[in-house]
Amino acid sequence: MTIFVGTRAAGLEAMQAFEDRMGLRYEQGRNYDNGPGRHTDVSLLSPYIRRRLITEREVVAAALKAHGPKAASKFVEEVIWRGYYKGWLERRPQIWRSYIAGRDADYAALKRDRRLRRDIELAETGQTGLDYFDSWARELVDTGYLHNHARMWFASIWIFTLKLPWRLGADFFYRHLLDGDAAANTLNWRWAAGLHTRGKPYPAQRDNIETFTGGRFKPAKGELADVVRGLEASEPDGLPPVQPLRDIAPAKPNVRTAILITDEDCCVEDFDLSTFDVRAVASLTASALRSPRSVSDAVSEFEDQAVQDAGARLNFKTQRLQANDPSVLADWASTAKADQIFTPYISYGPLRDWLNAATPILSARGITLCEQRRDWDTAIWPHATAGFFKVKKQIPRILDQMMGNVLV
Image (cartoon, rainbow, N blue to C red; front, top):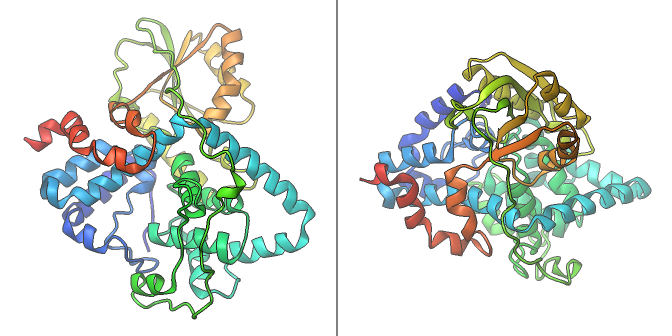
């Protein structure tokens, strides 16, 4: 069974090992869930890409170099999906706030409803009696990973067959997925529920499950709900309007600077740090912010490995911080006599919420939080305002802009 190690070296090794399967083999086999330890036709790179221990550009460059644009097109498209989801949530941050408010309301209701607590426990521990669903629940908890097709089946069954609150299912995933990402996780569950692509819920169908698990699972006829409509009635006002991208404060050269490493981007060395008067470097662990419930040890350990590895590559003594009281950031920067904190861009999610709480404390002490977006995000996010098709049409232009030297 695959063991994920949270270092850049491990990510590069995994990427190189999968390079020869990034072409037609991926396109033909990517939808098959072969079970734990047998996910050979999908890359298993998502925990590394999620934290940018390896970057999207590096992975796409490897695919294009090995297979060319045509054969690698499906693999490249799936990598770009991640950027689309992050950009979509950046353009509609109200959806993240709605998710948090709804999740907390669902947990409050859970405390009052004994039957719901029982049903949630049975689902999370793989004791529903649906062998396929229970197997996926156990695989997720045991390995921190679930095949993407299984994730969609699981979400659909949770929502429509078991009739459980979708946000509690999303929270279950977020607590256990090593590649758990606020945008991808929230929007995939919304998609299954018929909220992302309005009125088009994702149905878990018996023939589809049997086919794409290679016959490992054969749901009984009538066992799965017939999904005819989604949950769009729960959001009668529809999607909120698209917002401009959030303004960020750029870091200034020749200023006393503290560098903050988070698991949002663990390749800080990609950014030009040479103009900063670096006074301190810290790695921040923040996985506990994902949920009001306990986050899995595997997720916390992988995050800790990732940010520590990122700090070691900067060749600077790195202090370890935890995202508890937001004043910890100001205390650290003040002790270092820093006037600004530099960190790669933090997109919407629990860490962004925590930093929003920390920013007024920093400002009161004369410290500026400075961020920088990657060119990869800048190329994709302006197009991430509707469905993926709008981004898909731009893929040739995005690749030409970002990968021109690879395509020559």
